Figure 1: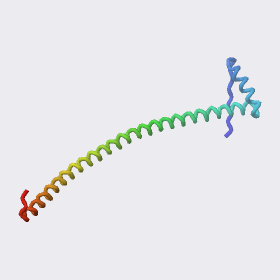
Figure 2: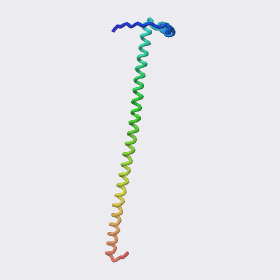
Figure 3: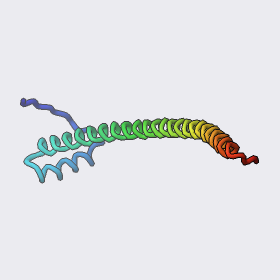
Figure 4: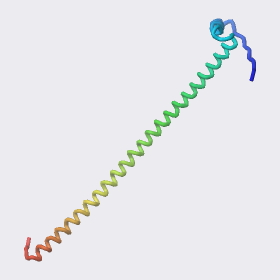
Length: 116
């Protein structure tokens, strides 16, 4: 694809004109220097857009991480509460078991004629 573009510098663009002239010494001619400048500007702008997108993604990931941590702590609290409820139920079962054991032991001992 071969296209040609032309433009004119204004009188106020003297600094830019000098810059292009100096840059042209490193390239084949002024046209190539301008082309390299445009490529640089385009790539720089493209990189900035990508960096901005990366920052937005990072912010969203941080938000998701915070939400996930909240859910995780809620789940841990629910598990802890369920564990305490289970422990309390087990204590009731143990107390009932102790009572049954005591009654059984008392019945056995009273069978031998020993009174408490």
